Amino acid sequence: MPTSKAALLTVSVVVPCHNAARTLGACLRSVLAQTYQPMEVLVVDDCSTDESRSIAEDLGCRVLALPENRGASAARNAGVQATSGSIVFFLDADVALAPDALA
Image (cartoon, rainbow, N blue to C red):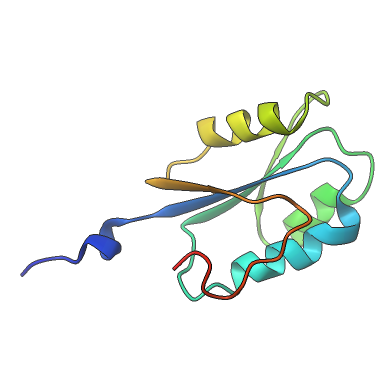
């Protein structure tokens, strides 16, 4: 029985953040409400001093905490290294997705 190409695609969502507590919750809730569910949601905490890490954990997202602030590009690169989806979807912590964005 043939398998559809879409069924083979797994999506890892990587959200780099630094002190993004104000917007991160809405961002992550939009990811978790997608019509095409990601295989994993990884928040790369770029040494935040606010509640960003606990917001992500409370929503059930995996968190990779970086030991020092190195910027969004370094956080994205660390996120790619820590994910295993066939597609990596980068999302800034101040963006909320439409429900069908991953589809």
